[in-house]
Length: 359
Image (cartoon, rainbow, N blue to C red; front, side, top):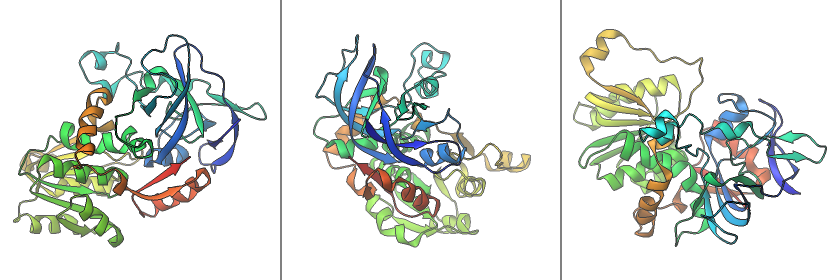
């Protein structure tokens, strides 16, 4: 029996309860979690913006220590530190075949599996494959990657989603070049990673935009050169800060139509907007045909930072060990499992950076 955060139904409150985990079968790994980040995607799962089978154990950003491995698992062994990969690539679908592993058609296939059960026998699914909101979890072997040397596992948990997403949004999706200007909308966990990645890329001006004045110090610590409180006039303020032109790149980390539109309007003619935030299917962003032609801007979706974890984790580890990327500054609250509902409330209210469940 281990403690876990269970979503009993879409829209229902999380329940912190005991679950019964099976021993790892062939091709599986059992892990004792060191920490798990509370990501906005977990909130999206709980409120139905993203759909997975329920009831489920949520949590997808985590790291821990291998307790046991099933038959056929050779790349990790008991005692190894690992980072969870919630979107493993199958290696066989069309997108994997052309190198776009972040768009793997089967990445979330495992969410339909049965993961564990409650004490009353109710069967549970593994949220986004890895069920990280639990003291221990059992996952498919392709959902674990060796943790980088020299990085505490509690910090390494953030590598499983926020950091890969934010780093990839800058380096793989927007492809920011040295000297370019960047504006980042939404300074939560992912936004803080985007700011740090923009600084690493050599951006000349990095503007952070958020509804909360309280996040300015945190944003500047992550690399922001300017801070703007979000309002109806935000694109105009961004242009004032960039000689009347707008930024070369905008990265939207909120997932709301108004914010996506504001990010697009904040870029210069010919600028690039990358949308990281996840909105609902009933939320629409509108453009007229003439402005699309006139402004020559691009608008691009970004899944998991367009990242390949096996490729990108070693590069990120080098930046972290060299002091160029600070994982610990992204964490504004360390909590227990029963603190997750309050962390969800803080996200809805636009407060704080990353909340981290520490086991």
